[in-house]
Length: 117
Ligand code: FAD
Image (cartoon, rainbow, N blue to C red; front, top):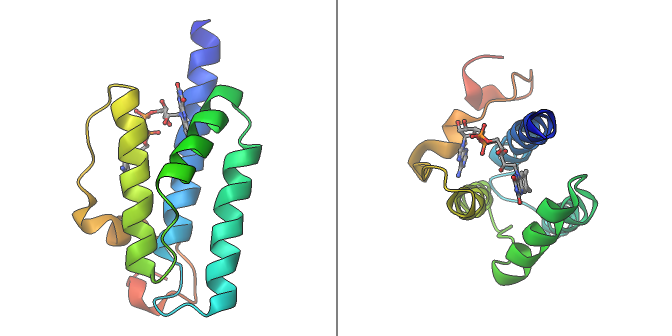
Protein backbone atom coordinates (compact mmCIF):
# COMPACT_ATOMS: atom_id res chain seq x y z
CA UNK A 1 0.00 0.00 0.00
CA UNK A 2 2.82 2.37 0.92
CA UNK A 3 4.51 1.45 -2.38
CA UNK A 4 1.43 2.37 -4.36
CA UNK A 5 1.10 5.71 -2.56
CA UNK A 6 4.73 6.49 -3.42
CA UNK A 7 4.18 5.70 -7.09
CA UNK A 8 0.99 7.78 -7.19
CA UNK A 9 2.80 10.73 -5.59
CA UNK A 10 5.67 10.49 -8.11
CA UNK A 11 3.25 10.46 -10.99
CA UNK A 12 1.54 13.47 -9.45
CA UNK A 13 4.76 15.47 -9.10
CA UNK A 14 5.82 14.71 -12.67
CA UNK A 15 2.36 15.57 -14.01
CA UNK A 16 2.07 18.85 -12.12
CA UNK A 17 5.55 19.82 -13.34
CA UNK A 18 4.57 19.21 -16.95
CA UNK A 19 1.25 20.97 -16.52
CA UNK A 20 2.60 24.10 -14.82
CA UNK A 21 5.53 24.33 -17.26
CA UNK A 22 3.16 24.03 -20.23
CA UNK A 23 1.03 26.85 -18.83
CA UNK A 24 4.10 29.01 -18.05
CA UNK A 25 5.13 28.68 -21.73
CA UNK A 26 1.67 29.25 -23.19
CA UNK A 27 1.66 32.29 -25.51
CA UNK A 28 1.16 35.66 -23.84
CA UNK A 29 -1.25 36.53 -26.68
CA UNK A 30 -2.74 33.23 -27.85
CA UNK A 31 -4.68 32.86 -31.09
CA UNK A 32 -8.18 31.34 -30.97
CA UNK A 33 -6.65 28.09 -32.26
CA UNK A 34 -4.04 28.05 -29.47
CA UNK A 35 -6.74 28.74 -26.88
CA UNK A 36 -8.80 25.87 -28.22
CA UNK A 37 -5.75 23.59 -28.18
CA UNK A 38 -5.06 24.33 -24.51
CA UNK A 39 -8.66 23.78 -23.52
CA UNK A 40 -8.75 20.42 -25.35
CA UNK A 41 -5.39 19.42 -23.88
CA UNK A 42 -6.56 20.07 -20.33
CA UNK A 43 -9.84 18.21 -20.79
CA UNK A 44 -8.08 15.22 -22.35
CA UNK A 45 -5.38 15.32 -19.67
CA UNK A 46 -8.12 15.14 -17.02
CA UNK A 47 -9.92 12.37 -18.84
CA UNK A 48 -6.86 10.20 -19.47
CA UNK A 49 -4.95 10.83 -16.23
CA UNK A 50 -3.76 7.34 -15.21
CA UNK A 51 -4.99 7.45 -11.59
CA UNK A 52 -8.74 6.88 -11.82
CA UNK A 53 -9.85 8.57 -8.59
CA UNK A 54 -7.58 11.54 -9.34
CA UNK A 55 -8.99 11.78 -12.88
CA UNK A 56 -12.62 11.84 -11.85
CA UNK A 57 -11.99 14.43 -9.16
CA UNK A 58 -9.95 16.54 -11.56
CA UNK A 59 -12.68 16.38 -14.21
CA UNK A 60 -15.13 17.63 -11.62
CA UNK A 61 -12.82 20.56 -10.82
CA UNK A 62 -12.56 21.38 -14.53
CA UNK A 63 -16.33 21.58 -14.82
CA UNK A 64 -16.45 23.87 -11.80
CA UNK A 65 -13.46 26.00 -12.75
CA UNK A 66 -13.33 26.43 -16.50
CA UNK A 67 -9.75 26.50 -17.85
CA UNK A 68 -8.58 30.07 -18.44
CA UNK A 69 -6.93 30.37 -21.84
CA UNK A 70 -6.93 34.11 -22.61
CA UNK A 71 -3.22 34.60 -21.81
CA UNK A 72 -0.13 32.98 -20.30
CA UNK A 73 -0.81 34.69 -16.97
CA UNK A 74 -4.47 33.71 -16.90
CA UNK A 75 -3.63 30.09 -17.72
CA UNK A 76 -0.79 29.91 -15.17
CA UNK A 77 -2.91 31.39 -12.41
CA UNK A 78 -5.73 29.01 -13.22
CA UNK A 79 -3.32 26.05 -13.03
CA UNK A 80 -1.95 27.21 -9.70
CA UNK A 81 -5.44 27.68 -8.33
CA UNK A 82 -6.62 24.25 -9.46
CA UNK A 83 -3.51 22.61 -7.95
CA UNK A 84 -4.24 24.45 -4.70
CA UNK A 85 -7.73 22.96 -4.68
CA UNK A 86 -6.17 19.50 -5.01
CA UNK A 87 -3.68 20.44 -2.25
CA UNK A 88 -6.54 21.45 -0.01
CA UNK A 89 -8.35 18.17 -0.59
CA UNK A 90 -5.15 16.24 0.23
CA UNK A 91 -4.41 18.47 3.26
CA UNK A 92 -1.26 19.90 1.71
CA UNK A 93 -0.10 23.50 2.18
CA UNK A 94 -1.37 26.21 -0.13
CA UNK A 95 1.16 27.37 -2.75
CA UNK A 96 1.79 31.09 -3.32
CA UNK A 97 0.68 31.73 -6.91
CA UNK A 98 2.37 35.13 -7.14
CA UNK A 99 5.45 34.00 -9.04
CA UNK A 100 4.21 30.76 -10.60
CA UNK A 101 5.02 31.81 -14.18
CA UNK A 102 8.66 32.50 -13.25
CA UNK A 103 8.97 29.33 -11.15
CA UNK A 104 8.38 26.90 -14.00
CA UNK A 105 11.11 27.08 -16.63
CA UNK A 106 11.44 24.83 -19.65
CA UNK A 107 15.16 25.27 -20.39
CA UNK A 108 14.29 25.68 -24.06
CA UNK A 109 16.30 27.60 -26.62
CA UNK A 110 13.23 29.48 -27.84
CA UNK A 111 12.42 30.88 -24.40
CA UNK A 112 14.22 34.20 -24.76
CA UNK A 113 12.46 35.66 -21.75
CA UNK A 114 13.73 32.90 -19.51
CA UNK A 115 17.31 33.96 -18.87
CA UNK A 116 18.58 30.37 -18.96
CA UNK A 117 18.36 28.88 -22.42
P1 FAD B 1 2.72 18.09 -5.47
O1 FAD B 1 1.33 18.47 -5.13
O2 FAD B 1 2.93 16.97 -6.41
O3 FAD B 1 3.46 19.37 -6.03
C1 FAD B 1 4.79 19.29 -6.55
C2 FAD B 1 5.47 20.62 -6.34
O4 FAD B 1 4.76 21.61 -7.05
C3 FAD B 1 5.46 21.11 -4.91
O5 FAD B 1 6.54 20.59 -4.20
C4 FAD B 1 5.54 22.61 -5.07
O6 FAD B 1 6.88 23.00 -5.30
C5 FAD B 1 4.77 22.84 -6.33
N1 FAD B 1 3.38 23.26 -6.09
C6 FAD B 1 2.56 22.92 -5.06
N2 FAD B 1 1.37 23.50 -5.21
C7 FAD B 1 1.43 24.24 -6.35
C8 FAD B 1 0.51 25.09 -7.02
N3 FAD B 1 -0.71 25.30 -6.54
N4 FAD B 1 0.90 25.67 -8.16
C9 FAD B 1 2.14 25.48 -8.64
N5 FAD B 1 3.05 24.69 -8.06
C10 FAD B 1 2.70 24.08 -6.92
N6 FAD B 1 -3.22 12.30 -5.28
C11 FAD B 1 -4.12 11.67 -4.50
O7 FAD B 1 -3.73 11.00 -3.54
N7 FAD B 1 -5.47 11.79 -4.74
C12 FAD B 1 -5.95 12.54 -5.77
O8 FAD B 1 -7.17 12.62 -5.97
C13 FAD B 1 -5.01 13.20 -6.63
N8 FAD B 1 -5.43 13.90 -7.71
C14 FAD B 1 -4.51 14.42 -8.57
C15 FAD B 1 -4.94 15.06 -9.74
C16 FAD B 1 -4.03 15.54 -10.66
C17 FAD B 1 -4.51 16.18 -11.93
C18 FAD B 1 -2.63 15.41 -10.41
C19 FAD B 1 -1.64 15.92 -11.40
C20 FAD B 1 -2.21 14.79 -9.25
C21 FAD B 1 -3.11 14.29 -8.32
N9 FAD B 1 -2.71 13.64 -7.16
C22 FAD B 1 -3.63 13.04 -6.34
C23 FAD B 1 -1.29 13.67 -6.76
C24 FAD B 1 -1.03 14.81 -5.78
O9 FAD B 1 -1.59 16.04 -6.24
C25 FAD B 1 0.47 15.07 -5.55
O10 FAD B 1 1.11 15.24 -6.80
C26 FAD B 1 1.18 13.98 -4.79
O11 FAD B 1 0.48 13.70 -3.59
C27 FAD B 1 2.62 14.42 -4.43
O12 FAD B 1 2.53 15.58 -3.62
P2 FAD B 1 3.71 16.53 -3.25
O13 FAD B 1 3.48 16.95 -1.82
O14 FAD B 1 5.02 15.94 -3.57
O15 FAD B 1 3.53 17.86 -4.12
